[in-house]
Length: 508
Length: 49
Image (tube, rainbow over all chains, first blue to last red; front, top):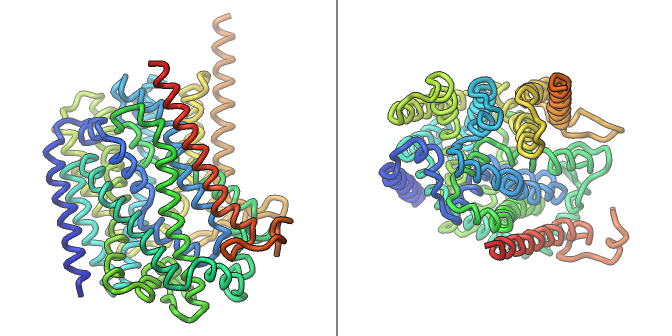
């Protein structure tokens, strides 16, 4: 039993970083975006670690187990979201941050449209909502995995990860989050890559795994597991579904996810932005491909009778596919290597959880309290106090909800990516690149995107546990958030054109 | 089931050619394009200075 000392060592290390980072925090900017002082590699790992959560690392392997190579597009789409976040938004937002003291996306919207209340409030509330929902998902993921694989008590796993994450986020803000993310990112990238190499070689090599995969004729998506996509009408793996999910929703939605895009203001040198896309894509692809290869290997290992996945604790009659990584690691890897998997999973979970907590705190304390309620006249001390209090509060609330998650929460977690895609992507892209975009257009575009995604999601998926595959176009299933995205885009363009026409008429 | 004529050629790493292209060749090509554009963009920045 060397898991426990290893876990304690890891947790103490993270808390020590948080305490050290707290000495660097002197201003609001220090807490919110590390004073815009992050170097190239710390920033790179922060971006990757913010993106790759426990849900992602375990879920990617789980999807590989379920659908094989058909969902390999995910490994291209997710890293591309980081490239887009930098190339489309990062360059401009970082420059604006340096020139105008912008700290958050909400700051940018307020600055761009000279609106200190409505737009900032709507964006901050939506951001806080999505972050809180995602937080519940993270805690549920860690609880389920640690219970299924390590035999930990579900609640204990959640409480331990909550306490440690809260401790260093509250102490050191983004300084602590970025430094811990640097370590966590290295652990996750290194851990998954080494695990994938050892697992693949343990099962006889990639060629043998792929050849065996082609033989599998039972279970979900059998017959398509070694193909780039499934048939036109197949749920989840049809070309249209893969395009609307991995071609649009994932890369564009994650590019503007509040816990990712707000990082771009923290990079010290704007010239580093030019070198970031290949580094972020390379790291992301390496990490996610490792996870997916592990999942695919898991399907083969189960076919060969090497492993058997546990039953899902929530969905009767289903296997806990997200447990494939730890279960396979336990079966194939030497014990001394396997115990590190626990730390890899913990690092993956915490690296996103901490960023989500901070994003929520900043939304409440800086965007809503400081800029709207106090009209920019509160002290740094008071903002930091509210920031930390709201982080502790939302941490406790979301962990409490995760202890006994209502079915609707599972549906909302699943919906969150679609909300990001339809709420922020049209608003931010058009406001940055189309000078005629108006304040009202963006405000209503965001509201329409947010509400329509929830309504369409509700209608097509029949919550709480819908699969999001019942929306068909020309007989092909499509991923539904595209509807909210189009509605939001059309709303922004239409209102902007109408308001600009009104201005031209009044001028003439 | 073969999706492309290329698949009739055989397999690479035990995968149909179309899957191999999607899984390894396409990401490698994207990575190469990103590296080249980063170098070009950096050189442009240097020459402006």
